Length: 321
Ligand code: UDP
Ligand code: MG
Image (cartoon, rainbow, N blue to C red; front, side, top):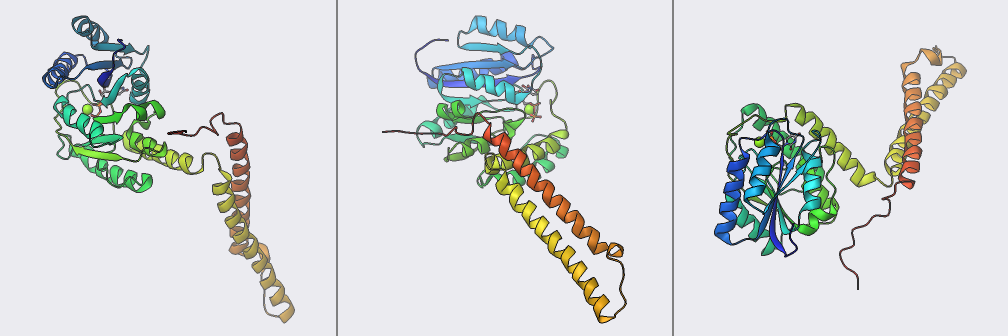
């Protein structure tokens, strides 16, 4: 890759998209040339089993702005983005799906929003989608949850593959697992505040088929919970487990005491009474105390892990004087 500054890096993660690649590369080139941008296209081949990698080789031979990274096996979209981000050299980094659902015609405006309006991240919003209903309805729910949990109120479409970043952002966040759905949340947690949105055109998939099934929503929800938890309590798990453990334990302790006192009261006042172990409240109290202690223990173990986390003192410093 050359050393003169590049305006735009386009990172394209792909898995078995051989038919789309030549069209996509030509389209991106057309847009870049028309606007006079210097650019690079980084195709990250995520272990495709078709001839995608061969096609990328042919494209790279024709256009020296095209580069490729090839995984030995299929790792997933997030790992592909991670490697693409690491390699990207442009001032602005744009990610795009390889299936031609995202339009390269959006690039100039995304670039302008980052460089002139000062956005850290601009996410595409497929306001009018060309996907089956089975996907669009759960997506609405998914986005509403993601907005509420992440606190990024202005995004309608977290999972849009078309996004633009200031280079700083991609160099300071770490996408892993299946966290590509929450890159804006990761950016926000790293202290990048100016997150915007742009309505983008969306097209039906032209070739091939989608690589994600409905399990994306289950996994997406679990990942969101993980991110929420680690961003809030990652280095201080006791603040979560300790609090709820104490609440449960105390509730259990006082209700067990109440069951006992009531029994004694009845014995002494001569009213009819039952065995403490015949009362359901006794067992509820016991369960609460046990759960509370378990939470507390989880908190201690969490603290031990947090203490040996090599990144426990990893802060984002934007400037020093
Ligand atoms: N993708 C990938 N690795 C995977 C699955 C998908 O790199 O394991 C790529 C895929 O080739 C495409 C993008 O991620 O470029 C989005 O995938 P897809 O179009 O199947 O998702 P959808 O549009 O249905 O959300
Ligand atoms: Mg797609």
